[in-house]
Length: 75
Image 1 (cartoon, one colour):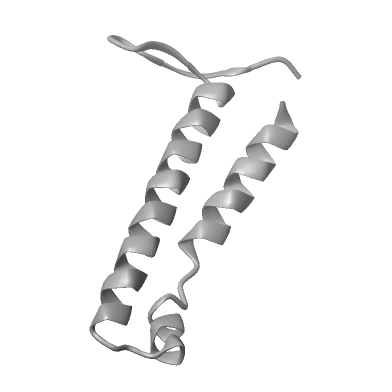
Image 2: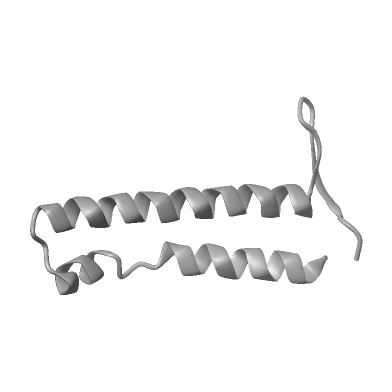
């Protein structure tokens, strides 16, 4: 399937699956950077690895990766 238009925005114009995938990839990279920064901060405050892992039980990164994979597979 070619890059399908999924929405039309009056200012931005046509929004496609590729646009959505690109935006989600940017969000994923930003999240990874934020996660690394937070882990470094927690380690500086002497949190152990088990405690840090328990704080990141909601795995947003995997969810975003799954959404990106499904959308790319649709193209």
